[in-house]
Amino acid sequence: MLKSFIHTGDFHLGRPFTFSQQGNYYGKSKRKELWKAFDHMIAYAKEKEIELVLIAGDLFDSINVLTMDVKRVAESFKSLDKAWVIVVAGNHDYNGEDSPYKKVEWPRNVYIFNEDRFRSVYIQELNTEIYGFSWVKNEYREFPELSFDRLHLNEGRYNILLMHGEVATKSPYLPINLKKIEDKGFHAICLGHIHKPGITSGGVAYCGSPVPLDFGETGDHGFLSARVEVDYEKQLFLTKNRFNPIHSRCYETLELAVTPEDSYADILDKATTCDSRDNRMNNYYRLKLTGLIDPEIHLDWINDDLEDAFYYIETDLSGLESDIDIDKLMAENKDNPVGAFLQELKEIQDEDIKKRALLYSIEAMLKEGVLK
Image 1: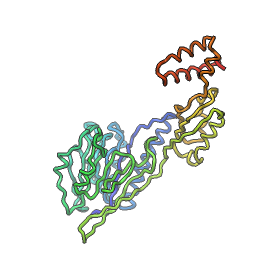
Image 2: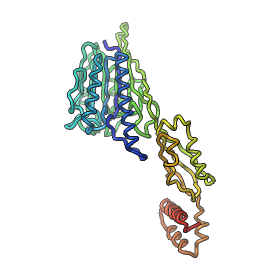
Image 3: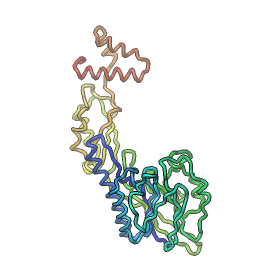
Image 4: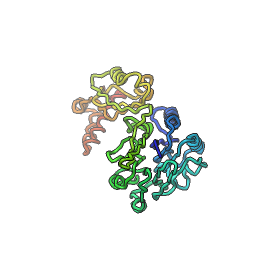
C-alpha cells in the first residue's frame, strides 16, 4: 500500500531567464538555482524513502531544452531506486513531435503519459492507480470531458488524478471545472501550472513552482509531500498534505516615495535602506520610485550607483514626475521661441499626451541648459 508521495512540477528546467541588468550573469545564476531545487527534491525523496514522485507538467521550460539536461533528469530519476516517477507534460514541455521526453530513453521506474486523453497506470505493489492527461500541443481551450467522463475508479485502490491546467471557466491553458474533478471520487488531485502552491477544502492541490521565476511570484515556494493513511473501520483512504519549502532567492518589488526636496543622495539613501543588508544582498529587487522630483536631478545612472548595495537591482521610474510649474515657465518665456514651442504643445487635445509632451520637453531643455 502507498504510504507517501511527492507532488511537484513547474521546475521549468532550461529556462533562458532575462534580466535588465547583466542578464547573462543573473540568468546563469537563476538556472543553477532551478537545478539546485530539483536536486533538493531528489535528495528529499531518497532520505524519506518516498515511494511515488508525481510531476504535474512543465518539468522543462520548452521543447527546445538541451538533450544533456533531459539526460540529467533521467539519471536523477533512475537514482530513485525505491520510487516510481509518474510524469505528465504541460504547456511548456508538451509531448509533441519535438518533445523533450522523446530525446532520451527513460529508466524503468519512470512512466510518462503521452496522450491528451485521460489514461491510467496501476502500480500493483502500491495498490495505487494514477490517472493522467498530457499536453501534446501548447493550447487547450476546452476540458476533455468525454475521456474524463469515461473514467471508472476502482474503489479498492488509492486513486490519483494528475494533470496540468487552470481552474477556470475559460482559459487557453486547459480550463478545469473544480467541482467536476472533485466529484469524481479521487483520493488525491494533483495539479500543475499555477506557480503559487495551494490546497482547496476539497483536496485539490497545486504544488506551485519550486522556486519563484519572476517578480510576479511572491510568497513561499517548494513542493508538496503527502502521507497516505487507511481508516479500516470506515474503509477510507486519508491523504494528509504537507508543504516543503525550498530556500531560494526572492523577488521583491518595493515602492519608494520621492519628494521635490529630496537630493540625489537622499534618493540613494532611501533605496539602500529599503530593507536589511542581508536581504538586499540575497534577493532580486525592483524599486518603483513615485512622486515629484526636482527636475534638475537625473537618474540615468541610479542602477549603477546602487549595484554595490544589492545582489540585483532594477528601478522603475514611470511613477515619477518632475516638479515643474508649467504655467510659470510659459509666462516667463511668452515672448521667446521657447514659449512659442510650449504654447504649441499646449494645443494637443489628449490631456495625458499633452502633459507628458510638456514635461519631457521642459526636462530636455533644462538638461541642455536652454531653460534655467
